[in-house]
Length: 312
Ligand code: SF4
Image 1 (cartoon, rainbow, N blue to C red):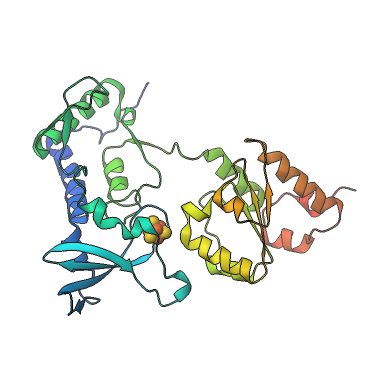
Image 2: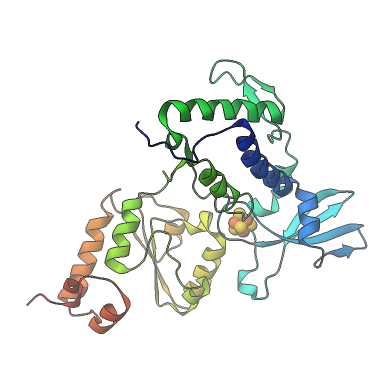
């Protein structure tokens, strides 16, 4: 791999430590569960007199994008349990077992809390605990070696959803960290071409921002396509269910007969990778049967004019 050396590309141990120290510091702060809760929730703290617990309002960070509000019950400096919190709009209040099980993750005996170095063969599951200084020293040496041999961009940071915390998450300090070290960033979870393609055709991207979820309550027909909200987006699923109870028809298109497919009014099994043909057939049906709202398409989408019935 060839690389143009940047005037800012020199990585000294000092600069690396400064960068990683800031990131590790932020992560450590964010990882310290009880102090973080206390700092976040001073205003929302309540005391459950019967049990001698303090109750802090917080939010689930289980990585499912649903952001359920939770109550953390703290006794003797330890989170004893989580219970459902309440948003002002009750439709968003709820939680699933992942959120309620947070204390088990926090206090799990298998949770990795310190830097560990592999000492055996890969796969042998043999590790030794090392200090943070040693870990930073070792990583800095590796980064430096790669950068000197191949250039700054040869160090790659790969991430996807994982954690979108503003401080320690993928949209937070890690971005600063990558920029500071001029790394390459990859996103292997998505086919980026798909995002660019849909943006050009219909004016939205894979990471587009659709209207608020509860708008689905006004839907007549909801299409679940290649998703399984029953497991992956329980908040959204609750709203879909309510819409269904109010008369919305639910269609699920998925190669797998998922839990969401099982609860849909109609399940359309497609062969994996053949979705495009289903989309094209649907567009053809709409245009051929004159069901297109030409004005709407022209005003509100970036679809090419062929969608606006220029077949003559
Ligand atoms: S749906 Fe479950 S995992 Fe997702 S934010 Fe809510 S409680 Fe957490």
